[in-house]
Every structure is written in C-alpha cells, then in structure tokens.
Amino acid sequence: MKKLLKEILYWCQLLLLPVYCLSHLFPRSKQLWVFGSTFGRRFADNPKYLYLYTAGDKGCGVKAVWISKDKEIIKVLKGSGLCAYYLYSPSGIWHCLRAKVYIYDNYSKDICYTLSGGAVKVNLWHGLPLKKIQKDNIHDRVRNPGSFPERLHGIPRRLSDEKPGDYVLSASELFRPIFSSAFNTGNVLVSAYPRVDMLTCNAEAFYLTGREKELIDSLKSSSGRIVLYMPTFRDSERKLLDVIDFQDFSDFLKKENIILCIKLHHKSRLRNELTGYNDDNIIIADPDADPYPLCSLADILVTDYSSIYFDYLITDRPIIFFPYDYEEYLSASRELYFNYNDFTPGIKVRNMEDLELALTGPDEYNNERKALREKLYNGMDMQCCSKQLLNLIKKNIL
Image 1 (cartoon, helix red, strand yellow):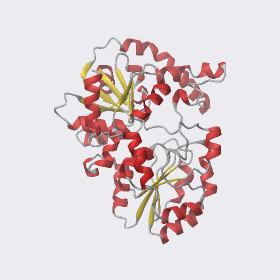
Image 2 (cartoon, helix red, strand yellow; image 1 turned 30 degrees about the vertical axis):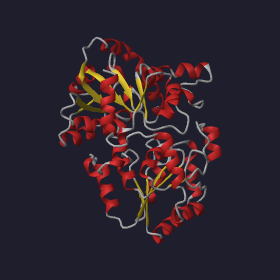
Image 3 (cartoon, rainbow, N blue to C red; image 1 turned 135 degrees about the vertical axis):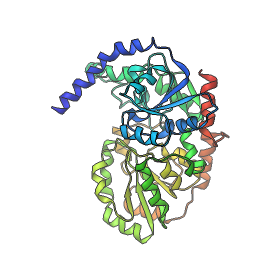
Image 4 (cartoon, one colour; image 1 turned 180 degrees about the horizontal axis):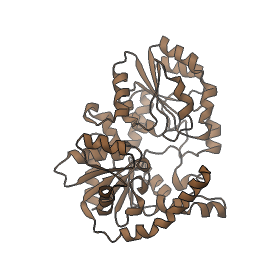
C-alpha cells in the first residue's frame, strides 16, 4: 500500500505544472535570493555556507532566505536571528515566488521547483566527481533509460530535476568539461566551493545546528586522534559488515587511542545497521548532519569513492582509501571519470587488518596529495570562497 501511495504521489507532480507556468508571471527581485539543500531536508553543504556569508554581509545588497521543509531547521535558524521560512507557509511561498535567484546543491526542488518559474537557478552541486554523475552515469535510469517504460516513468523526475537549470558550479577548471557533459550545459561557473571555508577559516565562526554541536563538542574534548570515515552510498556498501568486525575493531581503536567517527551518506542503506555500534571509540554521526565541521577536526580521512577527499586535500592531512567492493562498485553502481589509483593520493586498503596498519603507519603520500591539489586548484585562492562565489554570481548572472 505504501509503495502504491508513493507512486501516486510521484505522478501527481504533473498536476502542479500549471502552477509552475503561472509562477513565471510574478515579478522577481534581484536583491532576494532563496537557498535550500537536499530536497529541503537539511541545512548543509555549499548552499549553507554561501547563505551564512551572504546573510552576514549586510552591504552585499542581497537578502538571503533559507527555505526548508523541516520546521525544526527553520526554528533553529530563526532563533539565531537568520531569515528562514518553512516552504509550505505563506511567507515561504511568497519568498519563493519573489526571489530572482535560487541557490541549491541538487535540484531546484531543494527549494521548490513548482514556484521557480522565471528565477535564475544556480546549482552548486555537492562535490567534484570522481564517479560519473547525471547524464554521464550509464546506471542512472532516469537520465539514461534503457526501455520505453523507464523513459515514461522518468518523465516527472526529468521535469523537476533537470528543467530548467541555468548554471552549475565546478570547483576546478579541470572539471569544467565534466560538469558541462553531465548537466548538458555550457553555463559552468568555476569557483572554489563555499563549504571549503569550514576547512580554511576559524571553525568557531560557522553556525552549527543542534545535531552537530553536541558531536563537535564531544570530539573536541577527546584526547585521541580523530579518524573520520565517510563512505559513499551504493547497494554493495552492506558488504562493510562482512569486512569489519566492529567489536574487534573497537578494541584496536581503544588500544591506539583513536576515535572513529562514521558519517554515512544521507542516502546510505546502512543507517539502521550501524546505529548499534556506538561506543567510546566508535561514534555514529547523524547521516543528515553537515560533515564539514567534522572534516575540520579530523586528523585522518577514510573514504572510498566519495568526492569529500577532493576538499579534504586542502588540509594536507592523510587520506586512506577503503574500496573494499571496488569491482562490484564499478560494474553495478558507477563508472569513474579517472583511473582510481592515479587520482587517489593515499594508501589503498580492502580489509580490516590492512586498515589497522594504515591507521598506525607512516604518512607517505604528502607529495602525491600536493601534486593532485595543484592539478585541481591550480593557484586558486582557497580563502573566503563564499565571498568569491557571491561576487561571481552577482557579476556574471544578474
């Protein structure tokens, strides 16, 4: 029954197309920008940091408004003196209809696709892609349907996800053609990601939600090394439970005075399974929390195919790659844009024993990290990234 109801609601999106068309008639203010993230469910990622900077720069001439489907997020933001509205409130609807600029990190429905007609849409995306994304991803059946039923079923998604998207952001000139191909656009902006400000500036200056603050305070009070494990999501990630014996691994962490913080992707299929592994040395972070305050504290990053490591390169701290399902991932989930071994400057491990050795062994990849960092960012200014992007949008779009 739930599946049937979900399918009905999915197709009901088409009934809102007339509203989208009518939304083009509303006069929009260039001084009003609305921001949102992850389908309206999170306060995180690039839109968060650009929003915070814009809201704090009283002389920039822009009113920054956060739009969310989560009333708790709105309550906390308003409690901090920030401008934010629940999407389904009169004020939320009004600001969506009046804003000239939509800033988001997935699709315009992070804010509200239905009310976005006539607005300039800027997709900040959520990472430089190692794995193929959007139209370049042959496993994406919405954008690359393999049959007529798949093509038919993807119509509502293709409408709300893809049309229209005016600009997309790349944090590296090297990736400009990739974003152009993946999003089928020539309008690619190149500027450092706003979220990098969390890694290069004073972390105390950035806003934390309640779900993050408690965890951050706990990690700051720890005397051990902090290891952040951030895997990407895919069907084969359940194999992690076969690769890691968490009881034995916790004993190892305790012996080595290491705190392992596991921050799953918000779409992860392991959300429920890992909850029970919380102890003094293994901390399971809220998958919906912003990972960048965690990155700022981590002494070592462990990941697999996640784009998080491109940003973490800026810290010049060790990165361990843990592709325990490499063959399965490539064949069933994603192809990669680059040769994995050539583009991942860190030791590769595929079982618990090798992971333990990597966590206690020397860091021998400093030169490789530096080389990739220079290749990606090529002299870009990584300070005040939010300010740079704000000025770029104002100069080139409005």
